[in-house]
Length: 145
Image 1 (cartoon, helix red, strand yellow):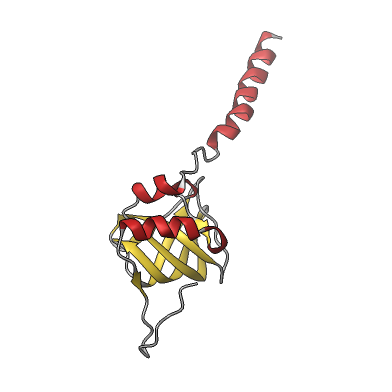
Image 2: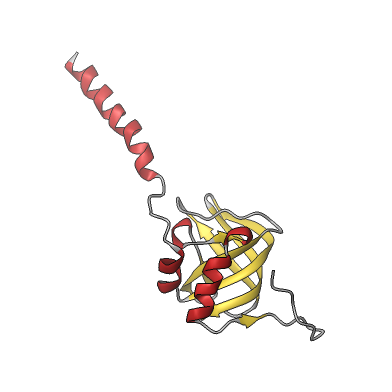
């Protein structure tokens, strides 16, 4: 009987520890996201590629960039329990960090926003950084919104 209780208790701990694996962070305010960012982009998701069990690479056409980021096509990785899921052809304001050469990464804990929610945050970014905009090959100015 004692052995059965010990097994049940240990199984209960395993079941109870499940939620502890979920992403736990407080979504930063717009001001905190801007203050703690080294780079941000606004762009459209062109392609999505699964690169691991819980990891995706998003090819984003960055129309606007702030900080260390540059406009143009970039690959943004989001992975793990705190991955920021995006939809193809949708536009987002993304806060990024460089994890290794050529790899830009984001997560739900960095202050990312869909296009419809980003106006106030863009104002804060423009107050902190010079905005760089994507110029298409034909020299025409790219629309930003």
